[in-house]
Image (tube, rainbow, N blue to C red):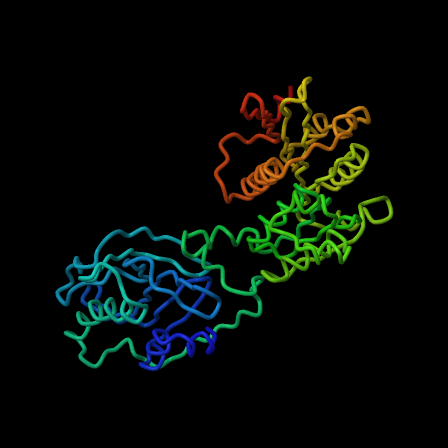
Length: 397
C-alpha cells in the first residue's frame, strides 16, 4: 500500500501508526493478524476485510457498509462457543485473487454507520480480540508489521474500487492475460473500447486509419472538444489519449487490416470486428477462422421507413470460437450485395452503444464472467418489434 495514501488520510495513518497490519489490495482494505479464538479454544490470527471507498485516488471516503468479511475460522468466545454478536453468514466468498471471505460479520454501531475506517476497524478488532485476551492477555492485532504492496503491475492507474465494492474482483481476473484487438474505431468500436477498458485486459490494440472528425463526435463516448477536432488526429490516437488516463496497455495502430498486416491480428487472444465493408469483414473473419482466433463481428442494418417518418432495422453480434465451428461464417453478411445496407450509413449513438454492449456481454459470457444458458453464437436485436433472436450451432437457420 502506498505510503502517500496513508499519509494523506488520517484514518489510515492512525491505524498504521498504532501498529495495525493494514494492506490495500484490489480495492479492498485488509487488516491482517487479528487474534481470535476458534472452537477448540485456540488463539489464532485472521484477516478482516472490507471494500475501500475512495473519493479520488488519494482521498479515502466513508465506509459504505457496517459489515466486514473475515478470513479464518469463525471467531468464538473463550469457551469455544460461536461469537454470535457479530455472526451473519459464512459464504466462503472469493473477494480477490488470493483473498477469501470465509465469514461475513455484522456489527452496527449505535449511530447506524461508522465515521471512518479507523472507527470501523477498531470496533471489530475490539470485539474479536477481547475474546483472545481472556486466554492470552499479551496478544494484540497491533503487530507493527508492514504490508506495502507495489501497484506497478496493475493495469489501472488508480485502484478499481468499483469491482471491490460489488464483489467481482475475482471474476475480472479471467481477462487479465488477454491481448485483444478492436478493428474499426467508429461508433460501435469506440464503445467496445470504453467498456473493455474497465476490465483487466492486458492489452487493447486499436486499428483504424481514419481521422476523428466532427460527425464522429456525435457517435463517440464522452464529449470531444473543439480543440480535439481542430487537431485533426487519427481515431486511434484520439481514443488512446483518452483511455491512457485510466489504464496502460492501449496501443493505437493507424491502419486498417489488409494482406500486408493481417498476420498481426492472428496473434491476439480475441478480436472485435467493427467494420462496415462486407469485403473487409469476409477477409478478416476468414483469416481469423483459419487460425482459430476467436472473434465477435458486429453489424447494424438501419433504414428509413418509406415515408421517412422513422427508422427501423437490426443490430447483430456474431461470435466465432472453436466451439461454434464454421457456422458463423454462413450467417455473416460477407457478400457484396449486402453493401447496399450500409450506403446510407445510418448509425445512432444509442444503437452503437447497444450493439457494443451486446458484443461485450457475449465476450464476457464466453469466458465465464456471465452465465450463458443459451450458448448462442449470434444475437440479433430487431428495433421495430423490440425482439432478440438467437442462433445456436446446429440451428443456424
